[in-house]
Length: 108
Image 1 (cartoon, rainbow, N blue to C red):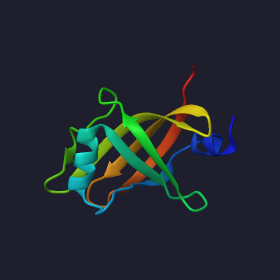
Image 2: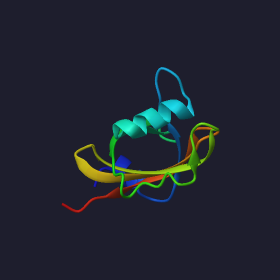
Image 3: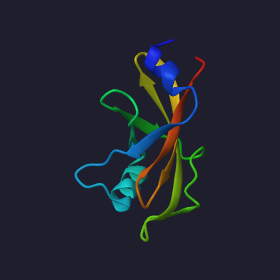
């Protein structure tokens, strides 16, 4: 398995919602509505910015209030990192747009 994938698959790591042009809870909600979210693992050298296709059934937004920027969003999505299919799981605090996350290799 790829070394980066292996490292991000062990334990939780600091992440943040990677949003452009502005980093707001509203921008995160718009990304979620489009079904594609960028998550940045900040503890890697230079950071690892991953775009993932959101799995709406596995994600949980019941604790998220995007208008008031309170609560948290549990985001789950699939992507390929260094030729390895993985599931990205991240919990993002809407006040700071940061949180923790990890990868899970997907059996093909």
